[in-house]
Image (cartoon, rainbow, N blue to C red):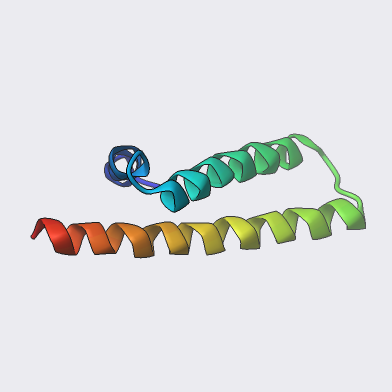
Length: 76
């Protein structure tokens, strides 16, 4: 995620609880994925969990961008 997007999320998350929740989840997913990256080999269960987290992170990111797009329309 680009710095510009991060700044927008920080700006609007105070007034939008859903955006704030999604951002916190996004950061948590990033942290969990970094833990998987530290491992040389993943068990099949870990591989499945990693893929699940990646999908959740992407879904949340899409939802965040959807919310942000509403704000950019309001600002224009």
